[in-house]
Length: 330
Ligand SMILES: Cc1ncc(COP(=O)(O)O)c(C=O)c1O
Image 1 (tube, rainbow, N blue to C red):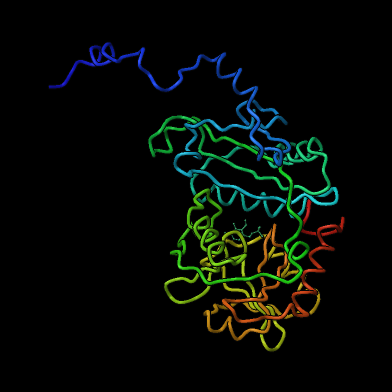
Image 2 (cartoon, rainbow, N blue to C red):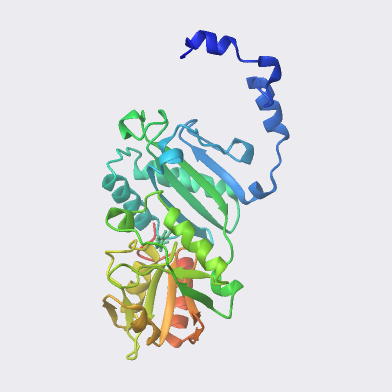
């Protein structure tokens, strides 16, 4: 028999609750005493909820009803700040707008506003090297899957300490395995949405194998990318070979590295690669904002050298990051 709602509520044995029920003031008091150790890395956050920057990690929260949280309905960028400069700001903002447009997210914040907030955040963070995670969510509004439920897009930008570049902390190069995780396709592969479960599973897969990166393979038997990095190889002739951007995210770093390669007279070829072709390459590289240009030295047990092209590209990219005249930066 179905009970009337009122009666159901009235019969709840309130005195026997096993979970604390806090008032707003209780919540604030406990929040003030909360000191989780991991949050020290987070230096500053902007939230569109308050249109303000906060530096206390206890205030770095996202509303649970933002569809970004419970549906992965949002897009993002990770942007490097190094040596007093924001690297590749324009390409990151262009990709952010493209991503938002691809999922029908009507994101109105101007580039000027985004640049101002980013510069303010890096000033407040006052460290030499940091990363900004720019998240644009569908916005708060409820728990359905319907994007129309969200009132307006949200913007959260968190600045956090960047780890040293991979080759600095791992001078012996990277160990890589091929991934068994089903690769993304369509716009989920080529747009930087907040649907990163396959990427997270690839990272876990790599860690289980004792590897630093995992490289995806699509159903046609061609390599895609790593979890948050692109893949490139150097062939017998010394040319840089890059898979076409149909099953991977078009990386801002990969784009810049290919421009640098081109300017240095290193031929750049765009073509699909099978795992067997990759095994036959002279060098294998993992490229991205945090990996920079990383040389692979172990592909499922097969040794690769830290070769001349990888070294040259890594050096050119490092210089570019610190070079105020770089064309692709702000
Ligand atoms: C899936 C994926 N591929 C590639 C990249 C590399 O892109 P970028 O060089 O812009 O960092 C990223 C960066 O976060 C990524 O998430």
